[in-house]
Image 1 (tube, rainbow, N blue to C red):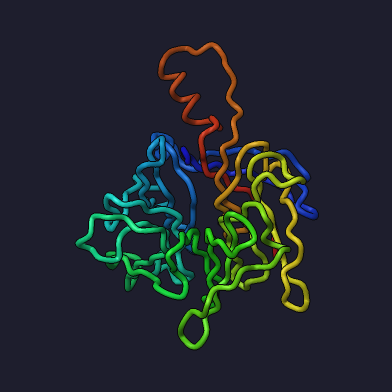
Image 2 (image 1 turned 135 degrees about the vertical axis):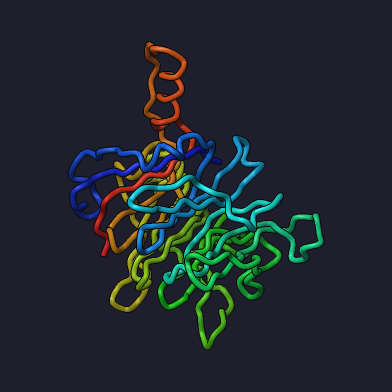
Length: 309
């Protein structure tokens, strides 16, 4: 599903989610350009640790990686130690930085070699320098015999995620599970201001649970393929009708996997946009650099400065 590098889009304040200036694209770090198919992204509150998914060209292989910053420089990315022959993707870091949620088809029994449906899992650590624990399945009622994806949590521990459920409104829908008395209660399908008979997926919930960013696929008011939409709560705590986040965040290509850094007002997202054009190349290295370092139609991670709260 993807290829990767992180780009920063510098924007002025967006009025009603409409861009007021052309974006300036800046690469996150050249070390990431060597990797194929990178998607979904989250960053720690101190900005010194980021997690993302690396995939093979056909997405048959999917692993979660981390990149850390020391002395203001990003180090070489590393795969997380619990990743094995099963599929791992869509990391989300807790607010204290010591729990990492993700989706995986790994079996419940460590001795089994048979993958199961996708569930939401997590690993823990006592502090940032410590090793991660072995993966732990979130269990029922969050997980089921269906596929659950893309976990995201507000600061009060309420959980939002994507599920492919027959009783939903469409193929993929966004669900909510409330954290109550130290446990999660039965997930609830979000209403038609969020979900539809189409595809809704990859939702990010804000810290205060006052806005939700997610992807809708092939909507009538979309720019093409999948677009990012945002819904905010009204004074009664009800979700308002989701609106398209507009250009240049969205494009005629696929946009998905949002993550919003509220402290720095940066929206990260994955896009398959393409801007490269044919030209005369100096040599093979020039060709390679041009293809790797620019939007090439394969998934890369972008960021835009935008005030959402």
